[in-house]
Image (cartoon, rainbow, N blue to C red; front, side):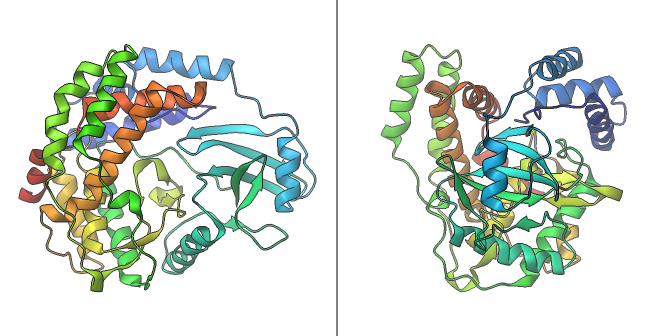
Length: 383
């Protein structure tokens, strides 16, 4: 589910709605702007366009403020120069809040990252990003600290800083055929790099819980009085069925992949270009497994999108031969999605703080209202 930035723009939302209208009319020519606005509001977890506009006004009236001295400490740790103004909130993500910093040397985006994103992990992503930029893919420029590191610890958290890049909103779902074709081309370009990777696959992509762990989660949701606890009970059989689909890993085909090109990590740039914002999740994967994940992220939400599937495949095929996909090709997508669903529900039950509570509650509702299913994956393969 989409989350509004800390300083949302109603103009950006209007552009998103117009873009979404084009995609909706590919399947339903009679779709109206009001339909697109209502669908976009739903993507943000709100009932309609007026509710979305009211949420924009609410957020602009209560902007988050940075902890005292944080901007100075970040500037010092990364050698950004003298701070010339207060840090400005940009957005909240699963990893934490992002801040815009202004110094006498320019503008910067400071991002908190998960603890497991170490300097070595960031370097792995940087290797892929640099090769991708050389191949024409647009991405932010990472800034290194005076110590030559991309990751620095400030106030007990891992941070990275990118040079500021003017970008537009994240793509709205469902995506148009034209945007799906561009996405397919990006994946094809990345896979054509064929960068070798000797690191093991991320455990998050291969480890699955026992059924007992899910039942315990359901009981916790009931005890917490969550209104969606009953819905969790309904979808568990569907998720247990998903877990019977194994992950087919061809070790000889492993290469360095971005591993997490989802709608949250893509921004629209100038002249229709797409900007890949996130590279820290890079790791070993096969093209088939990453394409399986890509399809679940981009052409199955809010429903299976046949036109986008064909366009995505055509965009990829214009760069690199499209591989044969089977249900097992969705193995990483299934594992990652189930782990994300579990973690979101856990966080919604026992949030770390108010920001995490809002984020997790929206994600929990989203995974329960639109669960991944075997039938949906089979429908994608049929297309």
